[in-house]
Structure formats: structure tokens, C-alpha cells
Image (tube, rainbow, N blue to C red; front, side, top):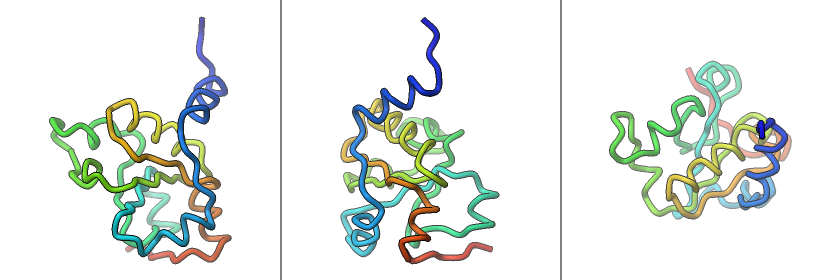
Length: 128
């Protein structure tokens, strides 16, 4: 049977914890939490980032998450709670499922993504 995007999204949402943006904003200063930005570089340049976040573009996520991969970022296997975000929450829930499937624990999706973060008054760091 062919999988559709809506099927992938439903499967991911069924198994991934989603954190409300207001709860995520309150977690920004928690040293045991790491925000993971899966947006593309051009989006980050235009809109900024959550301070202290790690950039792991969705298109390279598996390469970045795999400890044996040449692009691995050790922050993703630090044991911290990872809060994954994109622009609106679609790519990030798929990314969170991918990270979980790769054996990374404590992964959550931030509802509404970076757009909701800005609307909630979350701190934004401009890039470039």
C-alpha cells in the first residue's frame, strides 16, 4: 500500500510527544533541554533562530544524528531533552519520529514551530 504524507504525519503524531509552544518558551533556559532546528539555512537567515538551538536541516538529519556519520553533531546524543522545531510543526514531527526511530530518546515536537514561537513572544536570535 502506498503511504501518503497524511499517513506519515498521522503515524508520527501518534508516537511523538508534542510540547505546547508556551511550555517550550518556559524551557529555554533549562540546561537539560536542547532545541533542534530542522529548517533550511535560507529560512534561518530570514527569520532567525531560537537562541542556543542546534541546526540539523531535515534533509541531512539522518547524517547528523548518526554517531557513525561524517556530519554527526554530538549534541543530538547528549541525553538532553530534544525539542525539535521547523517553521510550523510539520517537518519537525517527521524529524522527531526519525530521531526516535534512530534510537535517540527524549525527543519532542514543538507545536506550531518557529512561527508559533515568535507569536508567543519567544526569544529570537537574528542570524547573519
